[in-house]
Image (cartoon, rainbow, N blue to C red):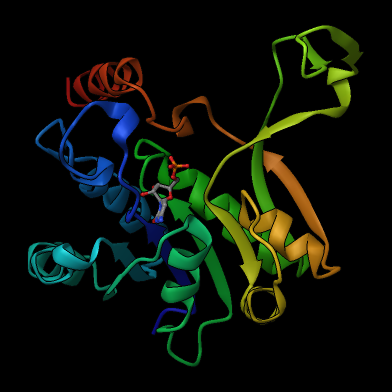
Length: 230
Ligand code: C5P
């Protein structure tokens, strides 16, 4: 039985992508954004317990469409409905985890092309360090802090900055504790866990783990999928 769970949040509306469908259900390659993300998780060295968090009206169809591929990978599947915010969606995913899971990876469906190796590396680092672990990239742009009037206040030292991605991995007990005690909304799970006083490290991320947000991102994703299958 797997001791690693991957919670994939896919309940966002994704209006910036310009589709009527929720972002995770937009076509990508032969499948969708979500099916591409699921394939990344199921490609892990050992099959995870998979939790998909989707819009309320997609729970049943998602369960029936992913059951075969998840069973073929000898993985387990739960599908639950999401909430109004990403944090609520993650929380609903965590609520259905069975006992026996000791490591949880939380992943954005929108980071559909994240290589399976990143999932494995994050999970291995969580095991080895017993801390939160997030994949991150160096920041290539020069970053400036600006005032409300648009005037530059300062240039931030980018050598100290990282752009963080998902999957973000945590010891299950730490993540459960942080979610149970969170009293604010955070933009990622690492921030929520840190707010509970728990340690988080970064490991190298991957450019392919970019978040599909605007139409140009979807075109880039299509290109990467086409190159992969060539
Ligand atoms: O909107 P954004 O791209 O930041 O969302 C990140 C991820 O969180 C997406 O995969 C999206 O589907 C998910 N999400 C969610 N529930 C929400 C909002 C976002 O599952 N209420």
